[in-house]
Length: 279
Image 1 (cartoon, helix red, strand yellow):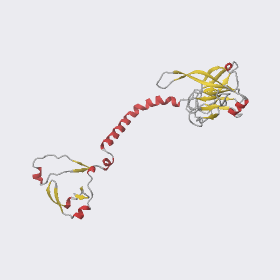
Image 2: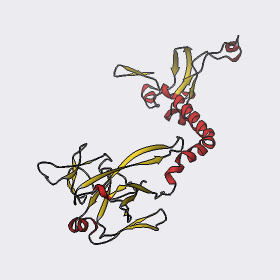
Image 3: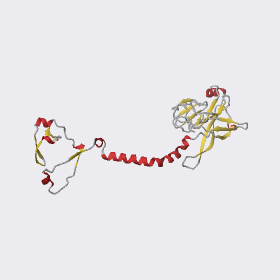
Image 4: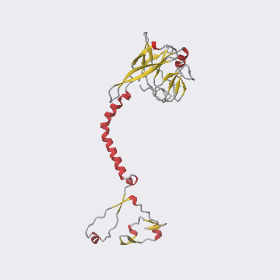
């Protein structure tokens, strides 16, 4: 043991440098003080002390002195504490055991995420309700939803329909028909660019909130206004103000000879610029 700057340091000394064991706390070395300072410092955190075992007359028979025995930790245990090592090992074994049991459950729960879009048509109302051009009219309808582990529920949803003037139709379609596709890339419907009626999803593209048609001081003819985060859209669905990343989502819409309106309830991911279909 060496004292440096008021602190005592223990060093690892080869057994060949030990000349005499005076007692349990004192030994005599063959080396000089300078040579002793060259030996590596003993870090007790890298060792575990064995418990003393009493064996009658062992010292007398073997001619040894009782002392402290230090057993070095393996390198792996120096870097990873024992408790952490065994905890991680237990978790890993548990995960391996649970994986075969969890896989069927996860497959069952995640199946709805990968099933094809149903592309079902919903009757939402009649165009008799629409009396003016370039004004939003709300239509409500019920849709059934079934989660993998829950019974089917009926959810009330809504869309907005505008009887569009040629200027609004051009702003929405730019003179081109709009096609809608299924999971396999097949065309399921085409909105004609000259169709007088345009249907918008009832969810704001910002965060999916509901919005309304409102007349304001700055927009006396009316605009679509989302009260949650103040996104504002004109009758063509164009963003006039607010945080919305894109225009209102145009839905597949058909009007039969009797004026009945049918739509495919397509939903897109909110909060992103491009349309990513979710439903």
